[in-house]
Image 1 (spheres, each protein chain N blue to C red):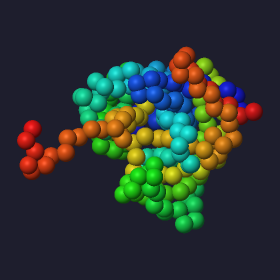
Image 2 (cartoon, rainbow over the protein chains, first blue to last red; image 1 turned 180 degrees about the vertical axis):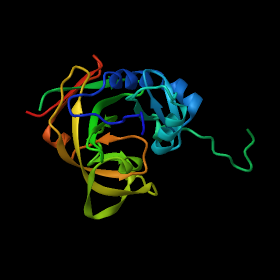
Image 3 (cartoon, helix red, strand yellow; image 1 turned 90 degrees about the horizontal axis):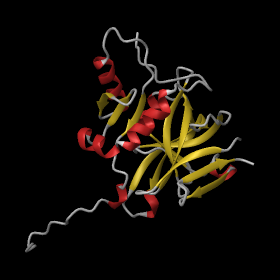
Length: 98
Length: 135
């Protein structure tokens, strides 16, 4: 049985949820540099799983969880470039001199 | 609806809100969405279809032209989900059914249908603060 609980009852949001989302927001650039655009599972300000999809990231977190660990309530966040429309790429042309 | 505090940022400028959506297991999952006054309907990543409890619309599959840009067309599935908003001060709304589009995106967006069209949205970029509430 999984020790990772991604859901909660109405009005009982686990206390780590807000601080973990704030931590991801604060460390967005470093996390993007380290993991690239992907899904991450974070618990108490630590990435415990990553993957290209939510499902893969969760499976990775399950694998990384110590056997002696009790139930945990991590968050899922998608790392991505915040300026998706503003990425600037050089246009390569065959006759470009520089 | 109580006043829900938003997370407001600069560089890049954006207002975010904590959402809690009903899952298939009967609990709620928290995620952060951008409040998007350019979004007709709230948009959610496709991978949430595997975990959320949703009611799919009749003729649910549609094609959308992104921000009016030619050739930026993507597909979406129209559905209803049960969702409530929350903030770090303990304010929360009552769970309500809202229409969403599931699409190939990484960024959840909260748009007009069922949410912004029923609420007052205030954003104070000078104070990095914002609120969403329904009178």
